[in-house]
Image 1 (cartoon, one colour):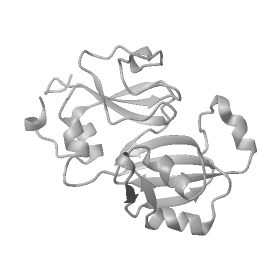
Image 2 (image 1 turned 45 degrees about the horizontal axis):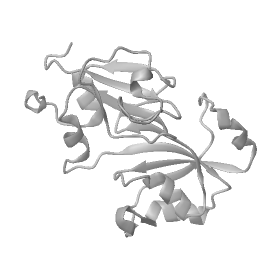
Image 3 (image 1 turned 60 degrees about the vertical axis):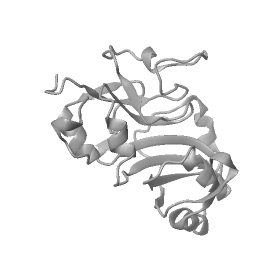
Image 4 (image 1 turned 90 degrees about the vertical axis):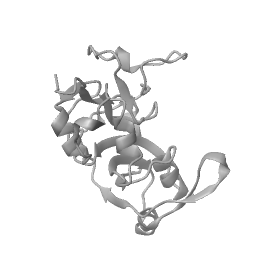
Length: 206
């Protein structure tokens, strides 16, 4: 137990699981994971049902504000498999900023970001839809400092490529690593704040 009494976890959220413990719909929930989370645990940020990868859970209600509403934006990195072959020109569009449609139907020009074509990562966990990898596709690594709704999916669609797989691999220095889908790792409080590059102080705990 940390001095503050709070606990901190990362999970590898599997495909087709929502990032919450309660839902009126018949969906797979975080509570279905084989782990006894303490009362008050909640997700920080979200990954949609079809996205995979790093998800933070904690009992500390102030982390969301510190991580996503602070003055300094925090980097989030994703591996993205898209349909078809991405050209250098299309990649440049992702890097320099591309127009997507956000809530309310408004056009939004994305902030310049890191984007690169990469090889399929070694040791990547397979999914039932793995047959798609037999068709022409491209793996991308994209790092954002902003998080509009479905932003990565909208960005690759804007350059003409449908997102077929989306995996969040890190938030700042907090990395998914080799954590298997559905598995949980607890992190000490000081390491949690250090790796997320959030100022650690006893005053921030609830």
